Length: 207
Image (cartoon, rainbow, N blue to C red; front, side):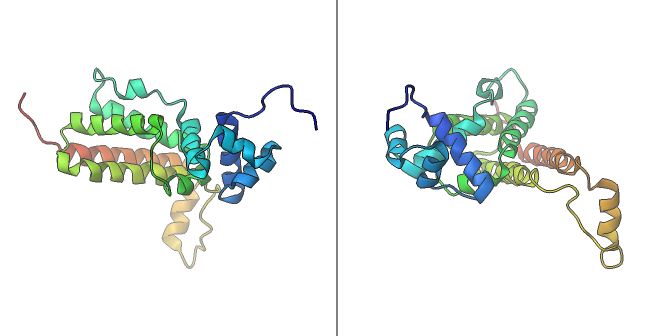
């Protein structure tokens, strides 16, 4: 078989193929990516010698590529504004492929872009005045809101199939608000609650 005139592979193409497989099947395999790209599995290892773990790193980078990390780390913006942006930007990135969340959280974070995004989060918590020994817990809480909402963004519309006799309260609420805005409205409320919690825990430090 003649060799292709151009190299059809790139780390980005591999990451996109992996993301598509996860959305379709719930996970990816090296042979599955190779079939999707019509290449030999060994070609993937040539581009990403770290195998599955490195592909997951590239998947994160592919999803987060449009996030403006410098804006999130811009100290001239208030911590509240930056936290709202952080949560909205990360949620929007993950909501493009909600099925990938479980794959991403199953592996350690080592890629430079994701680490920079989370460094920005810890800078924001520092600037809020969050006590050092509580920053990891608050980051985990914020992560839970963002990751959960990204998964929720993939829910069907309407979501709730309630019986008015068996579930009268749920049925009444769903009849009014179980539409395309449900997930985004819930996320906006969760962001407000998360920010209020961060603000409530802040301590004032002397210069």
